[in-house]
Image 1: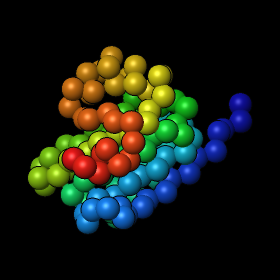
Image 2: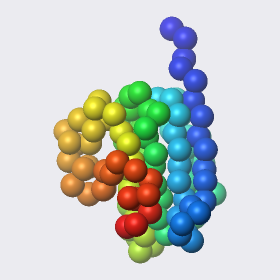
Image 3: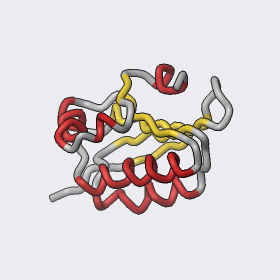
Image 4: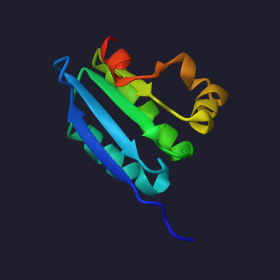
Length: 114
């Protein structure tokens, strides 16, 4: 089985200082877990936005990355938001009730307003 390509782009917000946007392209899984964790360590910010609009699917390790970022952000007085997930990813958020903790929004602009 061929692995799907994965790419992570970390951007600073043009609208608000202290906001980082993590644009994930490809599956967010155990295979990509450590790359995302490493980027999170090197991108301290008040608000972390995960743009998941190009994520076809996510497993429990991928969910763990987002939950870990949320817990870490809350300890430091920050926040995490998720943007643009597809139906499969939204269902995972609902099934695990993570959607009650982490805002799931349609656009990066909406998330930047948090």
